[in-house]
Image (tube, rainbow, N blue to C red; front, side):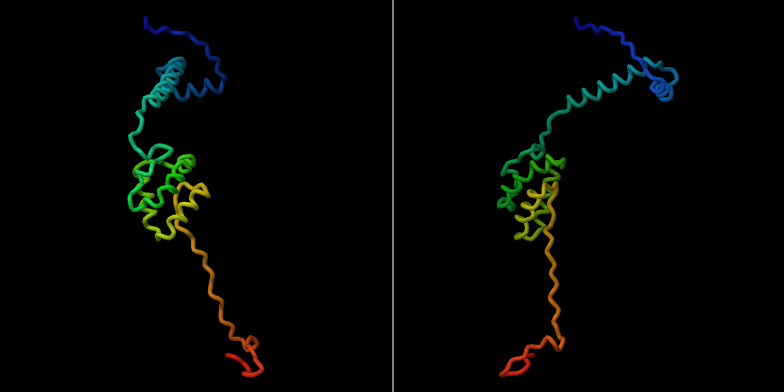
Length: 159
């Protein structure tokens, strides 16, 4: 009962399409054979996607649990769990290897900056965590100009 039934299909090609097929097909294959090959190739690609096995990687999911966070970073687990789906949504690779790299990156930050770095990644929608940029405010130059001296009545100029 499972006998394959062949169906004949008429395909109308433009001159440009026919010329493309003639240029790209091997000499011994007809246009119909070439078209059949394209369909088989597409079918095989789609079947390969369907047959791919689900990953056993716990970090591959869009959400993770607190038990996956290392003990030394447990205080940041809530923020990390909140940020993980944002990473996934932005197209970041979620795997154990990447998670370990992110944990190492987080460990490299000073402990007071870790929370802020995760909060910044969440609010900005980043795929990665970055060290905080410290605002550089140069020291005000000392004004040594004589006109900037302060004069008081009882002591005169204060230096």
